[in-house]
Every structure is written in C-alpha cells, then in structure tokens.
Amino acid sequence: MLTLDTTYEFELCLLPTDMRKSFDSLCGVVTTDLNADPTNGTVYLFANKLRDKIKILHWRTGGFVLYYKRLEKGTFELPLYDKSVKSIQLTYTQLILLFDGITIGNLSSKNRYKTS
Image (tube, rainbow, N blue to C red; front, side, top):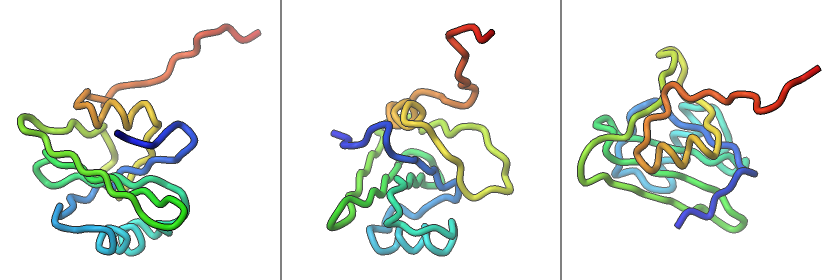
C-alpha cells in the first residue's frame, strides 16, 4: 500500500537504475545525478533498463521508505521525454497510472470549465 498522496512532488529518474541499489545508493543517485537533496520531500522513482522493475524512494520524518514493484509480465511504459534531461516531474495521477502499468505518454489535462 502506497502512503503517498497529491501533496508530494514526484520525480522520475530517466537513467536506467540497477535494482540492486538500496537506500544509500539511491540517495547517491539523487545527489550526484539529479543534483537534488533526497530529504527535500520529493518522491523519487527509478526504473531498471528492462523497465520491469520500479523503486520509489520517499523521505519521511525519521528515515526513508522504499517501495519496490516487479512485474511478472510486460513492462512499465514511461512517458515520452527529451533524451537530454535526467528526470521528469510526474503528477500523483501519473505516478499511480505508471505504477499500475497504464501508459501515460500522451496524457494531458483538459479544462473542465469555461473562462470568461
């Protein structure tokens, strides 16, 4: 069960990540590759090269929480992105869709109201 909600920022690391990495090594990826502080409240997602495994690193008061999902069949469909960037921001909805195996490449929000 994920204890995440819409109050967090989510960042997907686009560099393939070795899934043998744990808390300290993933913090090192955040610090060196993404130039960020792993304890800043952002939730970081990492996928392996085959895209059949995802780890989520989340700082909570007092320590880190690590979520790990391995697919038995198929791959996680990452959103389309510019190859020159190392990470992209995701919304909570995109995180849940990605984690549940739903393609999020062409999603966009549409206004549900008219502005004057």
